[in-house]
Image 1: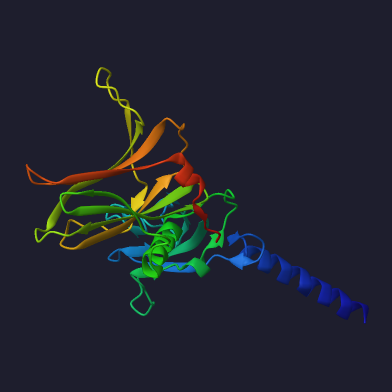
Image 2: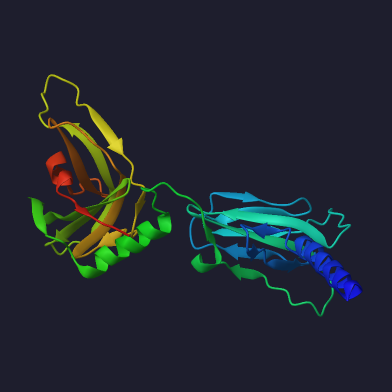
Length: 279
């Protein structure tokens, strides 16, 4: 009986050591790193659900980011692969992380994939700031705002057959979302040269130089070049503050030399009334 017990203990110890060896490449305490097989003639693309901010590529591979959400890796022709296990590939997004164990295998019967769609559910959430919002979430929120219609359309300016409207202001985390629209009541299409945001003094004196600070949007939902009747877009700005004697100026300009331009102002009191979005 004693020999049976000792044998059972020995088997359990061996199983524990084996499990420790198998699970050494893990993220956290329980999720094993999935394996990706690669060969010399294969370029593997990883599609992330959010903007990729950092990658750690193991020795023996090279890679780049052809797009903000896309990583591609391959084995260079000059690489000398000595072992099947190349290393761990780490992909870090804005709020999530994913790791893969990369295995070299040139056998024709091995199942290879040239596109790995990670998906939000396939990534582990890291500890973000409370106010941190990913670019993917900003795009999704902007689309929802555009789909559900303006919060409250307010015509701010009329000029040369163009009406400038502020449809709503929303805030989320460290960002402000401006719902801006323009109506063209003429029969001439409007070819956009640019839409700009600037902080300017409320009162401008002719004898003094105008103090102007341009604010660059973090993103815009649509890249519209020409509109015939109506234009509406969602612009994301980083949260900003400015004193009462200054205004946020929104200006739309046309490409033609004698082009029509129109602008309207947003007061800081307007921003204070913004709708708060919670996700």
